[in-house]
Every structure is written in structure tokens, then in C-alpha cells.
Amino acid sequence: MPTGALNILPKLFYCLFHQCDHNDPGTNQSDRGACLQTLAHLDEGLYNDYYGLWIALMAINSIIFLAGTILNSVALYVFCFRTKPKSTSVIYTINLAVTDLLVNLSLPTRILLYYSRGRCVTCSYLHIFSYFVNMYCSILFLTCICVDRYLAIVQVEASRKWRNSNVAKCVCASVWLFATVVTYSLLSTAFQQTDCISKLLFLTVTEFFLPLLIIVVFSMRIMWALADRRLMQQSRSENQFCFTPFHIRQVVEYFYPDMHHHAIVYHLTVTLSSLNSCMDPVVYCFVTNNFQATVRHFFRRPEPEVTSGDIVSMQHSSKASGRTANPVTNEGITK
Image (cartoon, rainbow, N blue to C red; front, side, top):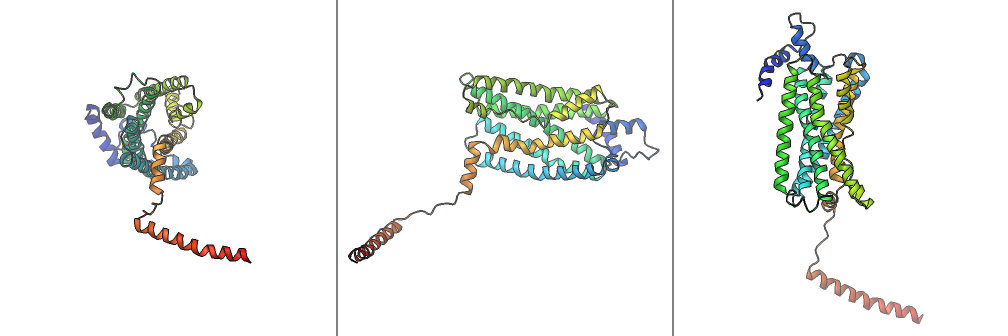
């Protein structure tokens, strides 16, 4: 465990047991301010000042939680148990679905945070680490999918030795390790400082804007390389739009820390970023031919097998119908 995390544990336990109560005269103001300022979404005034938004956020996050859990679970079932062989793109997509599912599973802590009116520091702590670690893992796996698509379309011959399952598994393990260590370390360090915006800005640049730049460059290179417009449609842009408002807000907050409606902008943008976990299965899983073929095969009614006895009975039935049909026809002619 990083040293910064060990140093912050006493402060976190203090906040957890005392709930960072503003009315407690024994609470140290600097510790309380550091704790509450680093947990940006711990807004105790949301319930009192924006009751309608408070209700809407709980409802929207509940819908995202249910829809995202179902969609990503179906995607994992299809790609893990119904798809063979496991190509590089399938491996990256499986890891993307896992991260999106973990993002969805972190939403109940945010819902509890809203329900507690921002007083549940335990929910806030769990939500920050589980949500943001998996969100940045999702962004990095979207980047991996884009680069893999570039290698498959533009650098076909040169990338043959790199596009195999072993390399893809090593890349996925590196992504998990990098995103977890970097995100956890920076957030733990930010907890120790009253002004944590600089740490959050560094996290935003390294794990969002840099991957976004890579995605834009490689996507444009793919579109330039494709002459067939039908193939160009398959080279769809990565689904980063839901993440963008939240990270733009992070940058704006760094330069304008006293901007108005800070809490509202945060809650709206972080909820929008959660919506990405529902859109990824649709964009990257459900539209693929392999997934659609699997679903058709799963819901297709099995056809009864025809045995040799059935064939003989069908032949006798056809002959009998022929003998009875002819006299009727002849009788009708004579009349």
C-alpha cells in the first residue's frame, strides 16, 4: 500500500467516526476542511437548496445502475462463454465490460451518499476510489480498442506479431495495474492537502486528455486510410463524450476555483460520465456481428430432427393424398 494511503488512514477514520460534523466544536477545522474539500461531491447543501435535483439524481443513478448492470452482464456472458476464439479485440472488450460493470456497482454508494444528504463519509470514500479507478480503467481500455483497431485496419502486416491474445492479456494487466496505482496514489495524496485541485488536474491530464488525444489521432488515421465509406462507418469514434464534460469541469475549476454553481456542475457531469457505462455495451458489443449472431442463435426455436420413420410416414401420406385427390379431380372433370 502506498505511504500516502497509510498516512491518511488516521484522518479518514477520524472523519468516519465523527462524520465530519460541522457543529462539533471539538473537530479540528483544518482536518475537517481537508476532508470535506477533497471529497468534492460531499455537498450537504444539495438537499436543502436543490431538492428537485436531489430527487432526480437519485432516480437517474438508480436507472443507470440497473440498466448498466444488465447490459454489461449480458455482454460479459456473450463474450466470455459464447464467443470463440478470444481475439485481441474480444479480450479488450471483455475488460471494458468488466470496468463498466464495476462502475455500475459503485453507484449504490453514490445513491446512499445522496440519501444521507452528503453526511456519509464512508460512502464518499468508497465511491471516490471504486468509481474513479474503474472510470479511468474504462477510458484506457477504450484507448486500447482504438489502437487495436488501427493496427488491424492500417498496419495489417506489421502488427501480426503484436495482435495476439498473449500480448493483449499483458496489456490489460498493465492497464489495470497502472490505473489502480496512479489513481489511488494521487487521490490518497490529495486527501492530505487542503488544496487538492492540482493533483486532480494531473490525474485528469494523464488519464483522460492524453488517452483522448491518442483516440482522436488514431481514429482520424483510420478514417483517412479507409476508402470505402461502409468500412468507415465501422470505424466509429470512441465513446468519450460522456466523460468530457466532467474533465472539462475539472480544468475550469483549477483556473476558476470560485465559479458559481460548483456543486451542481459536479453532480451533473459526474452523473453524465456514469451514463457511459450503459453506452459502451451498445456501441462496442451489441452492434457487432458476432454478438447479434449469438443472440439470434440463443433465441432461435430449435427445429425438430427428422428421423427415418418420419420420412417413411411422410411418403405414405403423400401417396395416399395423391390417390384420393385424383378421383376427385376426375370426377370433377366428368361433371
